[in-house]
Image 1 (spheres, rainbow, N blue to C red):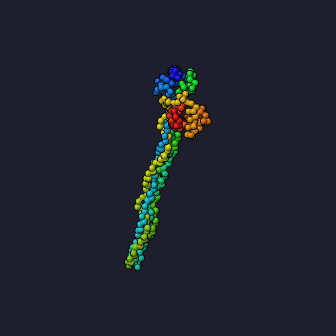
Image 2: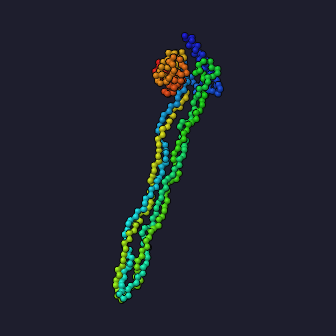
Image 3: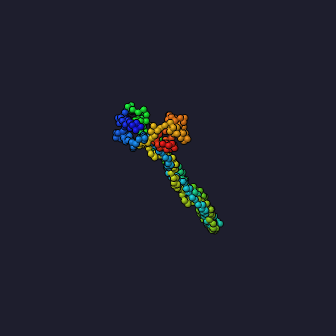
Length: 328
């Protein structure tokens, strides 16, 4: 048994050194500056196996305030204020009358102000236009993508000596619309002329002679509107409008982790696979028949479970076994 384990270890070292060359533009698994696989597993202890597993990206959501409508100013018209005033106006002057020669009068007209000149203000509300902007949803990032295994690989296991390539995933944007002030509120001023009333009155042209008879003057009461405060406008500040938007925030980028301890092939027995299948089914991930065979449906369920739990993706690593409650 010791000789078999020693032979297996020497064979693994030989295969590792044969993978140092690059194939089809890929990246060497061991060696080469800038390669993600330029290190070796942390221990060479018998009975332990390691693999490079892919860790899914970790996201969180947060609520942010987005501007919907900019702050503006609304102009409100304040009407003019008037006061009613009563005034007594003389319409006939006093004089004297003589018995022999009566007095002679003439009729004259006079303009009396009824309503003074006023100013009317007409307000026009502010106008807005809708604009669009690009908002970053997911930033551009890179990730290691697993390719086909190297042609000169001596292992029949496709998870051994595969080629990893760094590929870039472009950023994702979304279009948002918001309102921008295009024309501020304004007012127009209109002048309304004053109104007058024509009043007729008699005035003494020639007094009576001989006998003087006094003639009392005549008066008339006229009501007019007197301007107290002219029309004006006042500004009312309209605050900006915001809305809460939930955004997806990247906490940590996905990619290949360091060496992750996995279950060795000789320990991946049908009994162990059957335990994994039962645990996946209990967790809500359909592994297919509970037959102890690591088939495509079982592998697909295992990857879905690892992605959902934020575990290293690939192989039966010990973290996945612990999360499933399966003994190592």
